[in-house]
Amino acid sequence: MEIPQIPDLIHYAIPFFAITVLLEIVLTVKIKHEEYAFKDAGTSILMGLGNTAIGLITKGIVLALFYFIYNVFHLFEIPFTWWAWILILLADDFCYYWFHRISHESRFFWASHVVHHSSEKYNLSTALRQTWTGSFYTFIFWVPLIIIGFHPIMVLVQMSISLIYQYWIHTEMINKLPKWIEAVFNTPSHHRAHHAKNPQYLDRNYAGIFIIWDKLFGTFEPEVEKPVYGLVVNIETYNPIKVAFHEWVSMFKDFFTSKTSLRNRIKYLFKPPGWRHDGTSVLSSDLKKEWLDQKDEQP
Figure 1 (cartoon, rainbow, N blue to C red):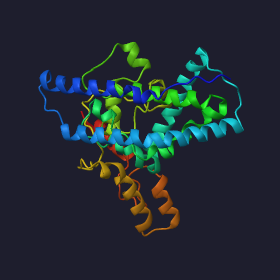
Figure 2: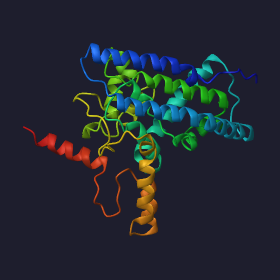
Figure 3: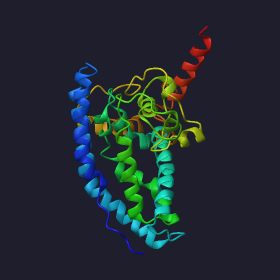
Figure 4: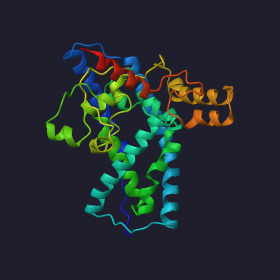
């Protein structure tokens, strides 16, 4: 199979990211007459730069692992053709949905993904607030594509395309798009709900490019009430080191210091964020149930 040389698309997209962030700042101040959160944006940009720098190492490791798996075993020989790119567009998005969903449902994966949700603002700079640790292990969700027979280069390219697509949906400048777009694609409206901590929006809208997966698996929630952004308990810091590692520190602190059985301590690593062995914490499912109960009680 002839393998085309394809550049790292994320690096080529950086100038576009910079220009559009500056444009959004101007529109926020001049059109919406709102103060722009420069400190928050600065933290997001630092997180993005750190993620890009670490990616220079991890992408090489991941590519090597993908090649190893591909060379040892793959079911089909999928060529670099137009129909294969359509297939991998859908297959990658399916993998992304489950990666994203599990990143909210398992604390081990949430420890890296929480970085992206730690901002109390929602703008294009928020899209750049990326993990410094996730790329070391979250690639496992894409291994099935390699086993099926998609070439490692195709997989990594499509992963980059998905990330670039998701950049533009991190904005409040776009309200609702035409109904057919909202019905099929992930949009700013859908993703605003995902970033919100309103009870009805918690753990909803995991889509990457296509919102159809959320509708198929029962995790879709339309944006109705104005979103309130951030974590259920915000971290109140602009320090990028704390943003990157605060949940890892908390998770391992629970694991090593909790006075409970080894079985329960292991659960601190893999149970949903907020789980505690003594039942004293409130999970997102509890918050949603409480919100639904209150809604039912309203006249």
